[in-house]
Structure formats: structure tokens, C-alpha cells
Picture 1 (cartoon, helix red, strand yellow):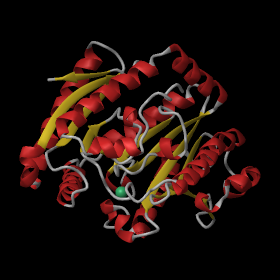
Picture 2 (cartoon, helix red, strand yellow):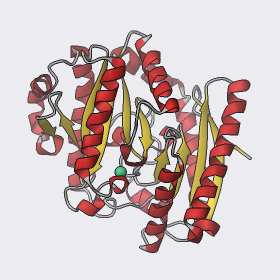
Picture 3 (cartoon, rainbow, N blue to C red):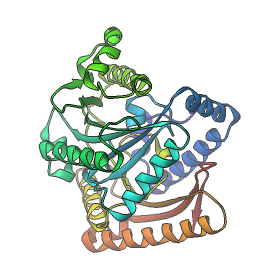
Length: 365
Ligand SMILES: [Zn+2]
């Protein structure tokens, strides 16, 4: 989708995370502006229109705030197609007032255009070391997986169990190789994409029909490129020197929504404003940043706290987004300062609003 000129992760992200904090922040803002420029280009606009015309399925991914999880990158999908919704440990409850309404709204906006909605419900782990798993669940992968099944049942309670329009799909993410583990609709069968070779792609459509016999055919066709993309991505990971990226390296906490432009792994812990208990994920994120500094995974001269609120329309909507961004920044600063006094003088706060239409980021005071 015309994002080919965006700086890609890899050696670059290692170089960047060792820069002084002010330079890292300057680079990040520049990266956001560049993303918006590319997003607004005629080529990019047409590519999105073409993608939406060709693909019948909207995709939402419920996942952990962990910076190593980036489903767009891991499936070679252009940014802006998979809508990520993040919280600590991938914990969600459709009963949360704001979250339930937002999810329903997103589903409506897709369904009203005659499309389907795929809801990827994600947990993560590391096959090499349990301690590289999900800190949000105390590294208990079974508990994290059980929770995804609970979310799946809630999605069915709200959007139906026949799955002809909204399809909840539970999938694991193995962070050593960025491999997706697809859980079949019966919860017994799994398809571990790290076990499939790039030469064996022809059997995939049949495997998907077996795993998801109740999934609409158009949706299976739209799921296929993600799976092929992940298999190609895993092959790329195996050829690269991965040891550096396997562990946490985040130097930013993102609070809010509209962070698609990051599109790179292991840079930020992102917390959506969904849980009624917002302080807990913020405090845990502060703990991960403090640990990253203590173990020299990132420089200890500072970290970035970035609050962001997107808006659809100028005027009232933008004004409200501005207040929201300010509130989240103040709230998050307070939580981190009181729970992690050692980080108090290392916080660099930036607040912004983002236009959904142009993806332009504006910093606010
Ligand atoms: Zn996690």
C-alpha cells in the first residue's frame, strides 16, 4: 500500500534505540509525518481502495500491548488493514462499557458496507523460554489462552454463534519466530504456521476449510494471504539474526489509539483506553521500561510517554480528542510517577491528535 519507503525494522531499529532520547523522539515524529505523507499519496489511496474492493473481510486483532507483537508485519500485510486493539495481556471483556461499544461500532461500520468481520483473538508465548512469554499473565500461557476462549464466547454472545458475518478466531503468536498458531473452530485442532514450508502452500486452502468449516468462503480467501505472509515472514526471520529482537526493547509507552503508523516491532508498549482499570496496565508498562533500562536493553537517559487520540471530524470531534489526549497523558504520568519513582525524571511526555482521514499527527500542548 505504498509504504515501501517507510523505514523498516531490522538493523535500523537497533541503531535508533541506542540514540539519545531526544533524537529518538525526533526520529519517531519524523517517521509519523512520513507515514501520513505516504498514506495521503494518490498511489497509496488507490491501493487501499483496490484492497477493499478485492477483499470482503475487515480484520480486527485483539492482542497484548507487548511491543514484539505486530500482526501486520508478521503477516506482510500493508498497514491500516488489520485494526489492532491492545491491552495488557490481551485482556478484554465485552462488558467493559467503552470497549463493548467501540467494538460494536467497528463491526457495524464494516458490516454496513456489505462486508464480513474477522476478529483475531490473540495470546502470545515464546517456545524458547517461558520467561519471554506474556508478562501480563505472569508467563502463564495456559491462562492467557483460556482467556482468549472466554473472549471468543463473548464475541459469539454479542454477534452470534453461526459466524456468517462476524468470525472470532483464536490464534497464538510465538514471538521467537513471529509464528501464528491458528486454533480451529472446535478448539482441538491447531495449525502451527512455523511447521509449514513455503513449498507447501497448495494444501493451505484445504487445511483452512478443515479448521474452519463454518467460515464463509470469502473470508477463508481473505485469511489466506495473511497465512502465506506469515509463512514467508517466518522464513525471513530464520535467515536473520533474531536473538536481539526476541526480548523486550521498548522505549516508549503509547496510551490511546491511532498508533498504526508505528508499524514496527519492539518499540512501544501500547495501551488502548478500554479497560476500566487503566492504571494497572500503565504501571506494568512502566515496570517493563524500568527493567529494559536496568538490564541495558535500552539507554537509561529517558523514555517516551505518548498519548494519542484520533478524530473523525474537525470542530467538536477534534476538540474532544484534544481533551482526551491531555487527560490520558496526565493520568499516565501520575500513575508511572507514583508507581515507579525511579522513572519520574526520565519521562518525556508528548501528546497528539490524529486525523483518521489523513493519518496526520499533530502534537498538542
Ligand atoms: Zn503479553
